[in-house]
Image (cartoon, rainbow, N blue to C red; front, side, top):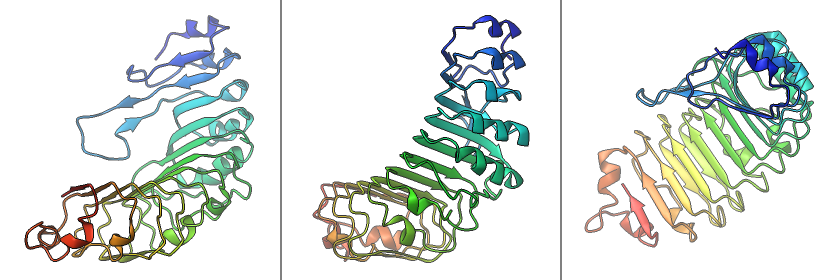
Length: 297
């Protein structure tokens, strides 16, 4: 923990504790009324990818006094009181919060609704299996540009279609059973989309004239996916497509030849028959991807 004397730095505007091993802040932090940037987290790069690979810090109740804060990254949702207090931070541009329990989701939504300047939002559940209860947000921050949700989603939050300024969305461990692309494809300014264990169904369909500005698309760790369809006129600006591991996907996505702007195609840990189908000499599907400058398998 930082020393309590940190509370004497009354003119402090930036507190950067990235990778500092500090895991908790003293109560005196709430007296730093000029604080604008509070950045603190630790990373465990020696472990396999999981929801705790980057850990936030514990902060005491009283954060409601830090009304000048613009960046708060990354704090743990240690209590319902703390989550409610976040609603006082109306100047926030960036918020990352971890260890969110299902029962605290509604309180967090109420707080976020008051953050009209928010540009970046990242929410992590207590574990990969914990449900994120984020439906109660009738008026999301309309300036939001990046959204990352890590944890189970019983369904895609109904407020996501309202995010007309959103540029990047990451859904990890969501395990959605309904095709999320039907909702996401209409977002007018979306440029980057990543689904990592974000969908548990068997088929994804990218419809014609969808994702008109998307440049980067990743389908990672989709264990049940066995078919991916891409309609003509979909993804007209897509430059990078990453797929895998997808152990049930045995053939190249139908319609991949429609992607005329694609510069990089990467497949990771795909089935043997899938890899063989793309071999330059005898692979039956090689012709579908030969127009792409970089194909990595």
